[in-house]
Image 1 (cartoon, helix red, strand yellow):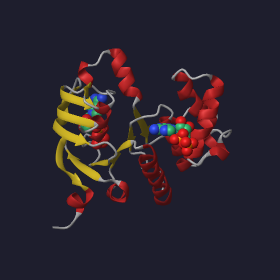
Image 2: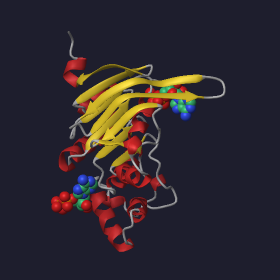
Image 3: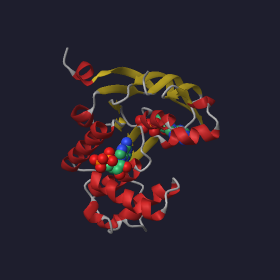
Image 4: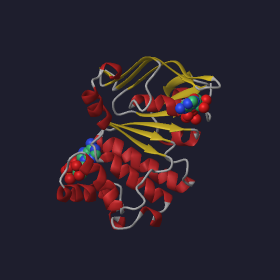
Length: 234
Ligand code: ADP
Ligand code: ADP
């Protein structure tokens, strides 16, 4: 059974001025352990699609199933549990600027109910995984973009997610840093078996680490398949 099933999903935004069909009848399955790229131009609907996977957006029609569980049929309590298994990182990192690197990671653990001392130990372990132990006491403003994204990744791992959603996570980074972050994501995928979904407008990112790719165009799924199938010349 695929870990993510998207069935006939539509999403319509109705504003005062107009109506935008951001997603039109999307069907997509993502298997456990995949690194799945979702590529398309700005405004194509990539963010909306991925936000439907953790119910930051609620589809207008259709269903999303995570590990076979229909999110629209979940109670609030069940939904909170599913959400904890779906982590997300962003283009602009979304770190707490007034807290140290260690505290940024601790904060997530304490929200999950972990005691302070235990949280600090676990946070140090997580910083080790992203190779940023040395910066534990620094503040985000003192870090490079790549280092900030490593903190965000460490924080996302705090909830032991089964799925990691990456929304343009390397778009603010230079090519060399991008490559190092992609290598880290691959490492996490292999080490922990976390399924990774990567939204990007950059073909190179997909070709570098994705196993599968979906091309989304104007709210519709234009093509899906393995990276070889989709990108190899006819
Ligand atoms: P992408 O991530 O591919 O750039 P988005 O999913 O952000 O695309 O947006 C898809 C379409 O939906 C765009 O036309 C965008 O303007 C519209 N849209 C996204 N969020 C909202 C919203 N909250 N209200 C109205 N329109 C929205
Ligand atoms: P080892 O046994 O080699 O020390 P672990 O598998 O215990 O390695 O993992 C090391 C750290 O990674 C621990 O802090 C652990 O909590 C964390 N960890 C383990 N599995 C996951 C996972 N699926 N997602 C995020 N962090 C994890």
